[in-house]
Length: 361
Image (cartoon, rainbow, N blue to C red; front, side):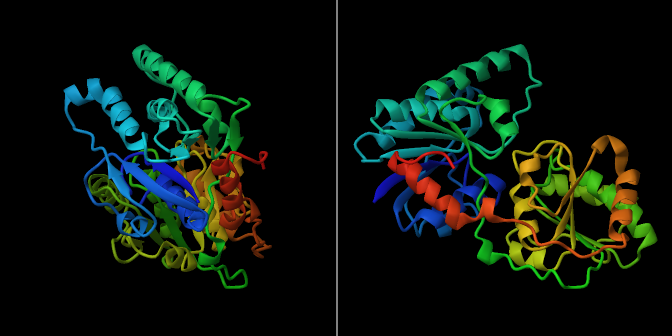
């Protein structure tokens, strides 16, 4: 059995990157032994489940200026000590630019399979010093990785670009967890799943929905996410637009059953400013939820139930687009093609990668 060290972007919270990590682990636990390195001492959403598969190893970041300047050495030395003499044959890094540090440590510790995995689109609008910093880490990744994986071409290009080492692998989901009833009568129940933050653009969502709710008193919106500070911004904005918490706007618990939330929804509004792929979009489509999506989201996320709009058109136009779409004469929902995201298929590819064999999909 191969022994693989996963490296998280921080901890094992309920986020998109962690969802991907857990799906890979669930799908491959019969052939690989997984441990994971996290950068916090806090117990998070997936800690208990991951402990069923392997060890959670901790290298917590300290929120100090000194730690910022010595972060490279702390990650390098901590990762090297974990790997040296522990018989890991693969390391699979999900921590963005800092993957380069872990991959360097892994190469020096004698780990043969070294993977950098990118899940987001890097925003290149940054200061010159930061660009030099990222260029340095990009070279570390290129030099020390034996495999570079990204969830979309756009994500790969924003970090290190295509090379002989790179491969696009879709974010996998266990399709049997998501049940779709394509014959059901559609209501006006909208949903969005994602961390509450500017990038996910929930303030835009409530603006769009407020226009719809003015014309359709039976319309509802459920926002599933976490980050209490930003949630308060959403609530204040929603109330100023005339939406009522508990009447037409709901905040289901983020640690609830996501598959069940999608099963009770009809449409998702997904106006992200940036998105590596959007695992929530994939899960929504697997559940038969039709998705209204910003054109900043990679087209690879479309399994057949996504309709793309420009954010430049504004919330009023988005509401009009959505109403026109919903009121269209042909309301038969086509079954999406989810084969590219099937965990059972993608797990076989990871088995090959961890074993150092096999060609790209």
